[in-house]
Image 1 (spheres, rainbow, N blue to C red):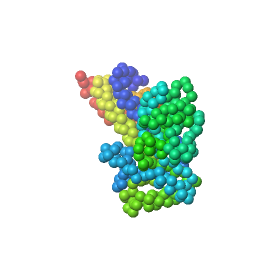
Image 2: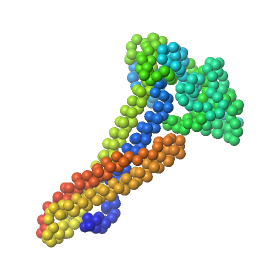
Image 3: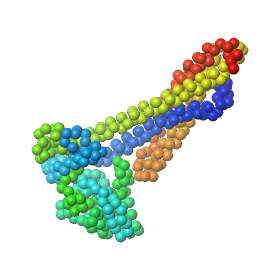
Image 4: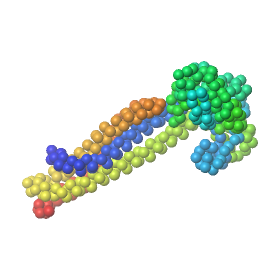
Length: 408
C-alpha cells in the first residue's frame, strides 16, 4: 500500500518511467506476432508454386549471390542475356520433368477506351496457368500455338479488368500495350498481393509476343520447371545444371551465368532470412527493455533521494532495512509490471490493426496472438524491475536514520 501511495503521488514521473518498459514490451510482442505471420505468409505463397518446382534464373558470372535484378547489379549496369527460351525447352527432355514456363516482365503503358496508365506485364509460356496453380475466372488462357505464333492476346488481372473496362465485359475488347494492340481473351481470378506485388494489377501475354513485339529482346530472366515429384527434384537439378553448363559452354562453376534452386532450397533460404530478421528485431527489443530498466533505476535513485527523511523517520519508528528494501523493490516492480500490462494491451491492439490493414490491401497474414511472447515480455519486465531496482533499494535500506532525518 505504501508503494502504491508513493507511486500515485508522482503520477507523471511514474508514467514517464513506465514508457521505456511499454515500448520494449510492445516491440517484443510485435516481433513475435509479425515475425510468425510474415513467415507463414511467405511459406504459404511459396508453397503455392508447389514443392515440385525448380527455378532457373540468370546470375552475374563470378558473383555467387548477385542476380541481374539486384540493386548492386543494376547500379553496375549488369545485364545477363544468355538465358533463352530454348534452354527451358531443352530442360523439358530431362527425365522427371513434366512441364515448364519462361517469364519476361516489364512495365508498359496500357491504353483502352476508358483508361491510360502503366501496368506490370508478364510474358509467360502457356504452361504457366498449370504450374502456377492460378485460374482464369472468365474466358481462357492462351495456348502454346498462340505463344509460338506471337499471337496478340492478353489475359488481364481482376483489378485491371475493372479499371480498363468499367461496367462492361472485357472479353473481346482491345487494348494497346507498348504500342501493340492486344485482344483480351481472359480475366484472372482475384489473387491479391503475392510477394508484395498486387497480382490483380498485372496483365499476362504470350512469352514470344512480349519478347519480340513489345520489348524487342531474345532472352528471359528466369524460367520454372515442374518435376514429377519433389523426391526427384535434386536429381533433376543436377541434370539441369549439367545441361545448362553444356549449352552455355561453362567449364568453371564459378563462371556460371545462371542459378538453379529447388523449392526446398528457396524455402530454406527464405527461412534463414526471416529468422535473421527476427533475431535482429529481438535484439532491438531487448535493448529497448534494458533502456527502460535503466530509466527505472534512475528514477528510483531520485525517489530514494527525495524520500530520505521519510526513510529516516520509518527507521526511527522501527522499520528494518529488510522492510525498506522490500518496499522499494516492490515499487520498482510495480512500475515495470504496470508498463508491461500497458505494453501488452497496446501491442495486441496493434497486432489486430495490422491484420485489418493487411487484409484491406489484399494480404491475409492471419491473426496470431503470441502468448509465449507476452509471457516472456511480462516476466522480463518484472525481472528488470527487481534487477534495476535492487541497487537503489539497497541504498535506501542502508541509510543511517539520524543522517536521514537531518537531510534537507
